[in-house]
Image (cartoon, rainbow, N blue to C red; front, side, top):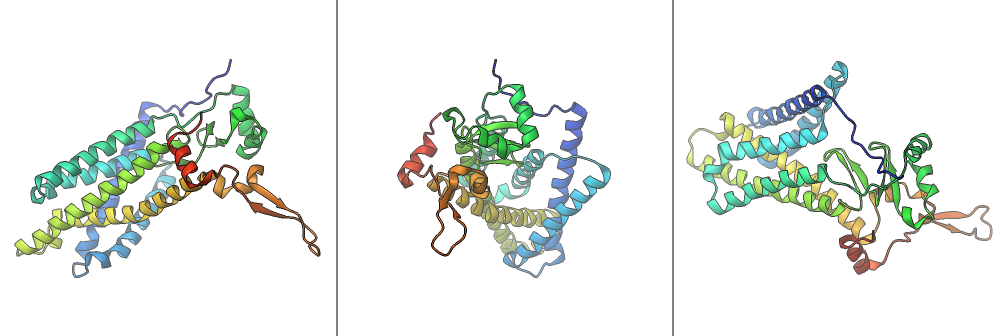
Length: 315
């Protein structure tokens, strides 16, 4: 009898609670560090603070990682993402909301609520797990994902099935394992992933627009400079965080849209030399001792066909 062969690693309630607490602490540490940037550099513009904020954020994450390794404490990337969403939403409700028009306020709150719902959906979704027995799971772990994939490359039942070493299972249409969402991205949840990624970009851009409106209004109406107010520092810090998030997420989103247009997965693009179907052997020319291996995409159906395949993939 074939089974899914997929189970999330079981952890005790204490381990889950501890990793969530560590993630919450790291999220708060990052935002406190970013809030210190406008405090230490009050004369710089928001644009000038961006590279400094990027360095501060990277340094904080690196120090947090070293601290976790030193103490042997694990953190949870999905919990870290969740606490960042809640922190930004909390700063908006506590500080910014009063200066925002009611329509824009309703839109931003709806965007944050939808982000949390989408985050839960993709965390708990089936990415396209392929049924196999336990012996296949053990064999795939021993041989590695590339050899396991090659065994089934000629079988239509296992078309574009790749093995994830993190989840210890085979995923149809495997794109990549996303630590931030705590799940693989495959054929069944790829559309949800793209929609959620776009949702993060839109929500963070909306937050940036609201926070900059609040900053401008506060500087025009208050005699005391906003940077000297604790709440103002958090508003500027979260604004810088949102801008930095939008910058890399837009690049990431464009990359995935590009892959959709070519009907190729991230895993296949990076490791195409491991999969024979992507290899085109060019016979050696006169005077050339060896043949040449070039990239070819057998799944490319043209722009329109690739878009249709994304929205209506074949099971």
